[in-house]
Length: 142
Image (cartoon, rainbow, N blue to C red; front, side, top):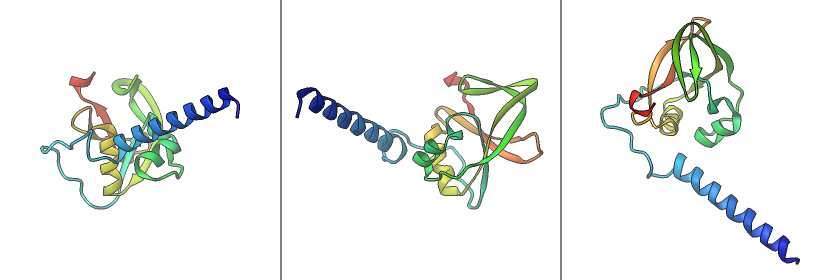
């Protein structure tokens, strides 16, 4: 086999291994995130979650909590998107998606968003009147 082809193959395998290792560490491993003790426990049952960033994409949702299904489109009014956050603004609109998840899936999403460390989860009312959770950046992480 040509040397350049072997080098490219080894490089691709190493990149794949690093990507898989990062995904495992971030989404599954017992290290990297400890849910703060002061956070309320997640109640059993279904939860609605409005997402406006990376969680709109099927591949990301599949990596985080194992669901690829297409969520319902949704809009949050009275806010605008500001990089990784949403901020109140009269007349603003944030397009996104509405997920329906169970308690185990919500716990995995909380881990992904680093609930209590980077984000807090708050209740909001969407443009169509449905209630949902949304992740809002903590002041200390802005």
